[in-house]
Amino acid sequence: MAVYRLSTPISEEIVRKLQVNDKVYLSGTIVTARDAGHRRALRFHNEGRQLPINLDGLAVFHCGPLMRQENKSWRVVAAGPTTSSRMEPFEDQFIKLFKIRMIIGKGGMGKKAVNAMKKYGAVYGAFTGGAAVLAAKAIKRVKGVEWSDLGMPEAMWILEVEDFGPLTVAIDTHGNNLFEIIQTKVDKTKEQIYKKLGIK
Image (cartoon, rainbow, N blue to C red):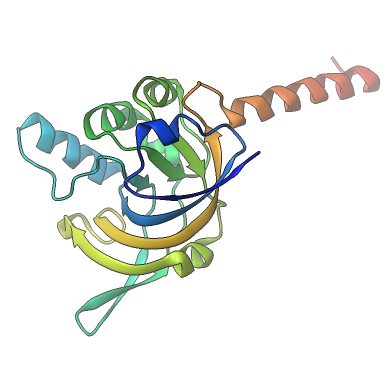
């Protein structure tokens, strides 16, 4: 296990050096996007329209943050990760088209997204669920918000972060998936326990 302190935009070369179980602390610009944000971004691309921000080399945070407006600026109150499997129908195209290098969320992703990470060069950084306030502390500034008509949780928030993490590399560009590794170990241990107890 290695520890990396990375800044966005992240190059594909650096991302491909990361291995499952590595820890990453991220600084620079990240954006939030959930279901509606992913759908709109892909629609914009299909219509030949530019996104409001160039995502090349950035990290996309699966998050519906709680924000407070103070003196015409925004402050992050809480920013916990959303379950990433919700974005599985869109994420492979998101990685391919927009060249994002890291996805931040919880719970991992499915085969299509994993294959896209391997092919195009992106990793999945798992952030601890229930640590929304910890995440908010690493967000130093709200640089802007796009697509606010989607509502606060679904809008695309553009955030400046410093040492955001620790993020555990749970899916790397080599197709290694920490969630599958753990599940295999759990299944094997369960089978051994059942055998000892005489349970079929």
